[in-house]
Length: 137
Image 1: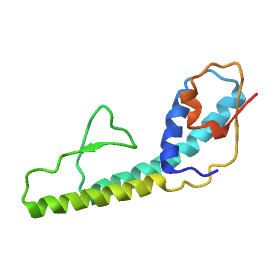
Image 2 (image 1 turned 135 degrees about the vertical axis):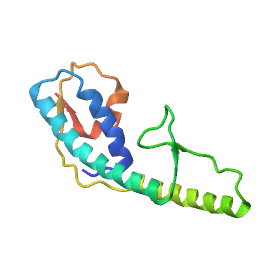
Image 3 (image 1 turned 135 degrees about the horizontal axis):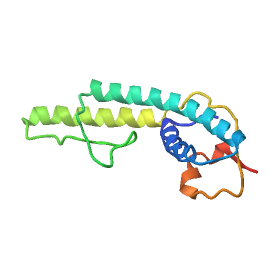
């Protein structure tokens, strides 16, 4: 199964929550294996994202909301009109490239299913990003 990098980052957050639960050994092993595959893809995404930030000379401003999928950057200042237009064009190109990256496909993550017991209690939000990888037993 292939995902977009956006889906992969979202799946990583869900898997982190599942990793905190005490589950049967079989489910725990499958979660660990999928987590390892997802983590490898997120690392590729992060390196590419960081390269884009560097290449386009984007200076991220760190906020509470910042994560792998969104961040804020310094406002375009009161430079000369020519410099301001150049910065705006550079920012637009960066945003376009970043969206292309988010929509890019990962390598095949396999078709393995995590067998979760039907009696565990989790919020649907936690499973939304990884629902395709789960079977309830």
